[in-house]
Image: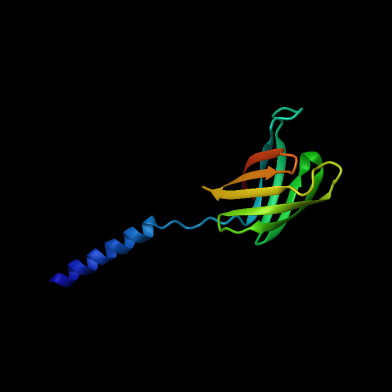
Length: 130
């Protein structure tokens, strides 16, 4: 008679442990959205389109409104976060090169921040592209 109770208790314990465990969201994939420059520049809070694809230690980034794009290389490690160095390869006269992009995925959205050597930055929340 003690065994059915022990099996039921063990089953409930395992169920509770698996329900409390959260799966780490991956930053890998295609992301898009719009960002705003910080501090606010001459254009004010004009949104700028951003498209980013992350695959392991690299990927691509594009700014369609500014007609520039480039490659990213991971410089910081993390499962649901990452830090990348950006290298603009197309439209180099339109976008700053060598910025640092920091990302963190949470609840299916990618918190995205770009910082440059001049102290300027861009912040955005991107969503997975279909």
